[in-house]
Length: 301
Image (cartoon, rainbow, N blue to C red):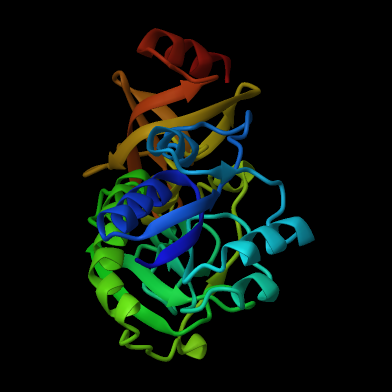
């Protein structure tokens, strides 16, 4: 029986650990993260899964300490896997497993290397993305590709909806690749970085709407960061107003200014190309605004 040390977090981590167990991989140790008090926790818990299955786990702030390296080394694992773990692993850790260290990344590498690839793909209007299992190197998402599974991004999909598809795609990719990894016969395709792209992390303030952009660009921003992510937002009468639900408007009323307006109990977000978003729900401090409150805010604005 092969064994693996796992670095994992989020729903992808949960599903992939379950996949390894189903394939007969022994897991002596999981390294995961403490949930942040400042983050909306809408995803599954790796720590809870480990507790339920009697798997030892730890939650160090940093994985590349001498203590962690020695602990992993003492296990002498066949594999190291990283599933949505948020920290890069040092070369000394990557050199420990006998049969390699592998990461599951949420894009079709080499496109969208780096942070939050699902959100970036939706923001850029991509029509597909996917999950990629690849060898880990000290350079992020740069190792040889073992396997990939593509998923569609439909025109109205939010990043949350695409992430659900990718969680399944990650499980499928790992399930299919494991037999050849265990046998030592897995293919290794060159990860052609010059044909791809790299993106950094995103902050809540990156969701500020620029209404001079086209309606499609603003809609893509909304879809990329819609709740449970922090959301696309505007300031209205000194209040931060977040778009919770919206669609591209089939028709925009004439002579409206750029930005949010209420017309006949309907909220429009008018954009620089003359088209608009039809806004179904707006949030302030997590609460959905009713039409009476909306009208009061717009009047004050």
